[in-house]
Length: 154
Image (cartoon, rainbow, N blue to C red):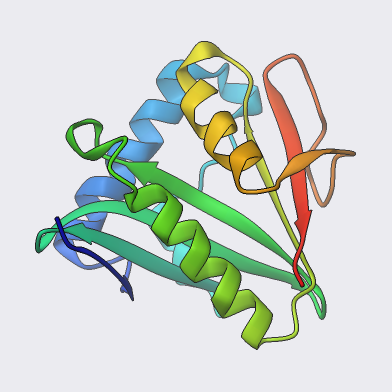
């Protein structure tokens, strides 16, 4: 089993399929007023870099980083297709994003995710990688439907 992580254009047709799957998942698992998933047009701005994850040559996952400030960035648009979950692709994307962030002087990486059971595996992954609950940041509010988490990078 080979995992490859690379910067990808979100407008690439294969990426668009995964990003739409992510958006559909979020809108079906969270009340719309608390969905913060970005559509493809918002993932092409200069402050966002999108990564694709391949498992044995097949694109199966996405993750992105949005630079918020000189030392603070946000993990965005994390999604692994159901058939590839539990195989380390999501973890590999987060590790690559952490490396990318550190190389740019980012010392804090934050995220917002859902609180429903549909997001449990994501929360477990983030916690296992050192992310901890935090106060809401940016445009977010912590509600019954979402939680913010952060990690300080070394």
